[in-house]
Length: 304
Image (cartoon, rainbow, N blue to C red):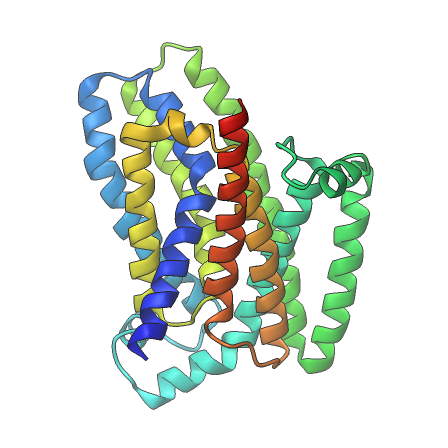
């Protein structure tokens, strides 16, 4: 039991850290244009907000959103107690949460595979899909139709959950696109440090949704999610402070994060339909995939 919890926290930490590399790079680039006082504020209080407020509240908000019969206090207390009625309600809603999160992660991976610029960690496969980028919207539409069809056979709410997952993807994707545009403006403008701090907090909230939703593929235990995501976020903070240029050289880390997202999304969808998925599978697969692409990055680094 203890080993399983430690392994889950390890998987969550690795996933959160690697999936947040893009966020760390944006943070570092914007911070480089700010004064020393504003940088110190962000790297202390700003990071505390990111770890404890954003990543701390999001799991509770997500669970409450799928358990509207419970009060926010009941959802919060369920994480630290074993009230059978509350726990039973959360367990009943788990398939809806899992299918929504699974569809979100699946769409996130497909968007990266078809449309986003990348270093080719698996050249033949990734170059092929990049050349077929026009098919992205057709593919996600077909996937959503098929998943929703089978979900509706289970329950109307599961079908609704699949649609919520796709909707959440396109909303957050729009925010991220806007964030990239705003980053370019901030780097080339004389806006105040206060405006830049506000921008960084909004960006961090947007990017954290991927990691928090993915964490439910590891466990439905909110305390474990808080610990794993918290450790991962602190690693990202340290990277932002001291090693961002070195991390940029590991060019295939993003590939590892995205293939992990694919596997986690599939696990969540299968789990939502009642397939038994061993608890160790999500952290094990995450660590193996990211380790593989980390190794590929090191080889590439030695060649250059």
